[in-house]
Length: 312
Length: 140
Image (cartoon, rainbow over all chains, first blue to last red; front, side):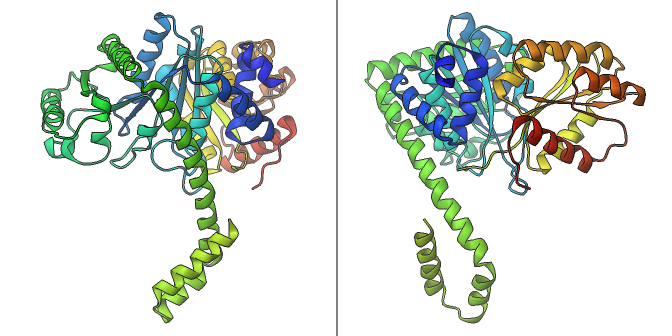
């Protein structure tokens, strides 16, 4: 019922369906299965980078540029959930006020809800849903990412890493993790004096690499000043170039397969993590007592491992 | 798998540059376990309702310190009704004279929070209003 209305483009129905999907209700999951049959057409773009790098402001510009080019744009914004209350303060949308009033733009915030790695199982389900509903450009903003938040790489077609001047030197650019996953590196706030240094640092890191870049694509560096809308058009041009590249190499569908497997992986991880937390919580006193008194860590770990297995 | 959390839109309606109160309340709702979408200053009724639709929020929380609540809230309620948000809780907070509270409630505002409202009172009343209007049970 909701699905039919959503497929007809009714915005409130789309929105309520997404809620049912993100909370794994029977209607939500049934609809998602239907939508996955229709999905697999959208170009999915991930935007990652540290908090305050300008990801949301950049996306605000991207929405307008894509809308201008006639695309139907879906946007998923992930912000962290509190480890204490599980509540969330989601402020990404403040950077894109009014953008949702444009035709064919749908923006949705979602809390990370205990998912680590920058992206979440729920977000991947929403990608499938928006894709199935006919959005042909889908932008996903990860939580403000740290060095190891690299799950996005198997979840999207095009990984965009946003950096800002003044946050590190060449050494940071050479490190493992987030600085090696980008298909496109954006230097935002490029009007800052250290922008050229950052450009050289990232360029050195890319040029000095002997590894084959992901599927033979030489990562591009794009400078933007998102708040002034500078470099946005050029960035979308690079996205389109990357899209054409992966299509020409037959990789478009492969990445959709990766994304769907990742979705299942994250859902399984969530299930197992829930079991771990449950066992830890129930046995907190026992565990600390055992460590202090018996000193047999291996036995203790095996015992808890068995508890976790039986509670799955 | 996850348990339903209350999702709230916190927004400033109209021409009014004071957002400290809205931020404090948004933060308190986060600390009470709610998922808060914060859209900040100078929003039109149209913008607020559009965001509320796309985010599928359970609650719209509007902060007004400009004194224009009796002009702006009817416009917001009209827009909510037109777009089918009949089951979304509407709460208003800010500098509102006590004699205007009955008028706002008559218009369809579910709760009004005046200066001096405690954060505990705000989170509790919002939770109860969501349970009543959205038909979901929120575990504490």
